[in-house]
Image (cartoon, rainbow, N blue to C red; front, side):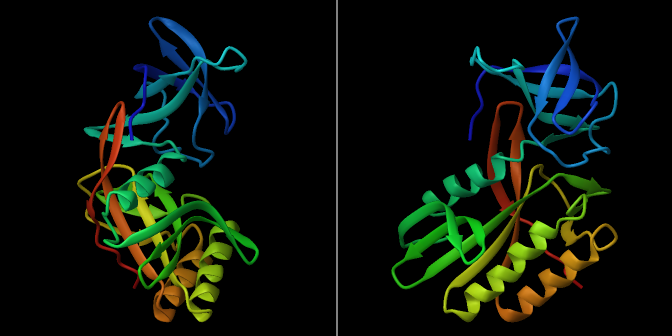
Length: 227
């Protein structure tokens, strides 16, 4: 996926989950943060961030904060991007070779899953999670407790029991990481649900991304460690 009108700025502060103050061309601007997660290890005063300029005159903020520089590592932190890159990846034959149908935001039971795919002989529900939390090359999800995430995992197990295939795809919004694991310290229930899902046959994948200031594309598989 590609962004338009991207420029760099210097992060100043984040007064709440939705906005940040960023210095752009010598002026401090109010920006919309496209990630409601904590991201405290990313949004540190003085770091370089990447902003997409918006043309909508009705918006309160002119810029969306979509990326950040963490040392030598560029990280995309747009929470809407993982769904888009997985959709593009699947459409291009990156995960399945005989696609007949791809739908977004498909309801099943009490959940709405990110993607629904039909191939020649399979019907598949897919939930996508973006991963931005990294420490010494190890990436983890979630960065904050997510009861919604646990609910999605359990609904995927129900899908399996009714004859569908089910996938959870963790999109690591950076590259050159060692492996992915659930963040059991932050939310042990999510890790437990994920291990149960694997035992029941849910496919659990992690993929990393090529990240540029104005681009994000799925790159390669990442090792998943659940135990």
